[in-house]
Image 1 (spheres, rainbow, N blue to C red):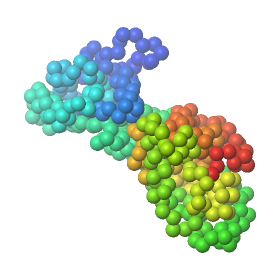
Image 2: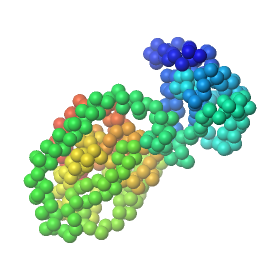
Image 3: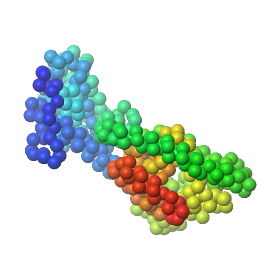
Image 4: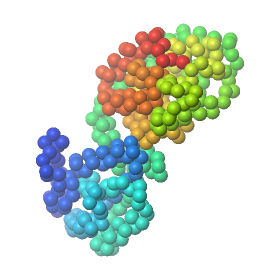
Amino acid sequence: MKKLLEKKPQIKSHDRTDQFCDDEYGCYNEDYFLEMLLFERKRSERSGNPFLVLMLDFTLISLTERHDSIVRVVDALAVLIRETDIKGWYRYGDVVGVIFTEMNSFDTDSFQDKINEGINACLSSQQLETLRLSFHRFPEQGRPNKAESPQKFTFYPDFPEKERAKKIAIYFKRIVDIIGSSLGILIFSPFFILIPVCIKLTSRGPVLFRQERVGQNRRTFTFLKFRSMYINNDENVHKEFVHKLIAKKMTGEGDEKNAGQKVFKIQNDSRVTTVGKILRKTSLDELPQFINVLRGEMSLVGPRPPIPYELEKYAIWHLRRVLEVKPGISGLWQVEGRSSTSFDEMVRLDLQYATNWSVWLDIKLMLKTPWVMVAGKGAY
């Protein structure tokens, strides 16, 4: 049994041979199984085709009975699962997982009942009481599972590893955010006086525009900007525009009014005040977001935080932009693309940033931001 609990050396991607399996139990080794799980998740994010994961947690079973329990369950699974399903160690010695691919044409409830019956028949009542068996579907009822939900470590085992690997860098990023946002408020303090005066003199309503936005792990927060529109506007105008824009790029269909348009914001919007046009062109309306950064809701650099109704039309793979990194005032999209890119292009830039994020990349993007603000490219 001691052999069971010892961490076996895992085969790394660069020197793999045909030895993907743990011969003792007939399961794929942990590294390979987790890699296949990530592959299936990413494929499902793109295709929308669901898959099912079975988790069999043996940690509550005594060490004297665990080996026998695992052998019995693995033998039972051999006749219950399909040839295309993937069986392996989710956590070696503790948790066995099975990835059931392409489940869209199956009656999931009946399938789960069949698996349960097969496993119940091979274990004693005492073993069944201590075995923790659970099924996890991705995406959940047509929508992606939240990364902060209990299923986070089922479908996103790479997230904790990324966080641990960059723990010091993330801590340093937070320090930079606090110092940078504090300096930003200090440096731009004259604008925090001048802009409110201009807004009050030219239109009725509050100085600040507050809106619910979606941050990392789909947590909502109150997003701050200097108000650039007249008050009492119907948000359905923008909601309809964004829904059409996202749907158009997802389906490839054209828009009769804005054919070929790539702009994420409405051009020549009559709801924008005269002062608001200047603020938007220079991005000075974004200055109050330094407060969001100080609160820890945003970062100086990161993806644009979406409005909740945008998520209604997101494809599954789009959701990764609100799962992997904290939203920011500036970012790869804001610097390289801004409003002159399509929605899908914006998401790809955000995912590129999330994949390649480093402190040095943040510094380079922050240094480019002032020039983008002055040039006003893609600002509306």
